[in-house]
Length: 167
Image 1 (cartoon, rainbow, N blue to C red):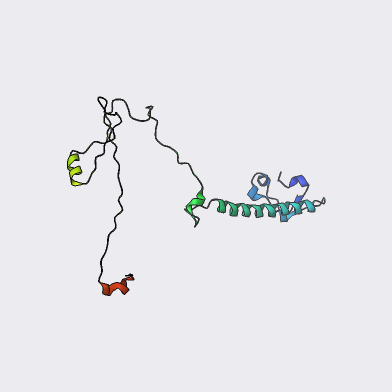
Image 2 (image 1 turned 135 degrees about the vertical axis):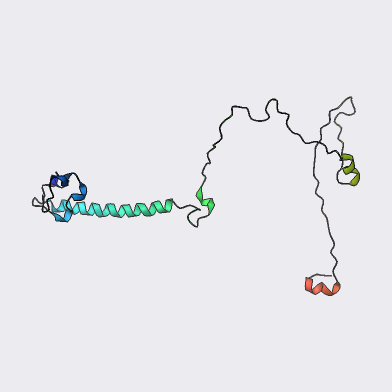
């Protein structure tokens, strides 16, 4: 039985019993003639098929728009949205931070500390929180200071106009 036999239509192109099993061997809708007044039904089928084809085209266009990103179009990377990067590392079971038995590394005072102070490359400051009472434990803090340096550049007065300088 073919898909069109439910509307009591006669096929003008019969291809044998295998036609019902293989859709590629079914006759086209145009080769079917209806004798029981089912012509409007075939028109509806044709309209639905046309609508399905139109919707398939629209889906392809919309999928093409959705699949665009900064790698395959001129869109900026900020429009890609956030994509979480999976963590591929295996968990070790250890707690975070320094591990037991590991000696660790710390910032040490340079061996030539006194030399750096004498040459002016370093400065030593003392803040006493003990008020001079007994033993103490030192804690060193390393800070950097930024100095503003004004440099005067001298040019020949005859080049004043070329360099755009004011007197």
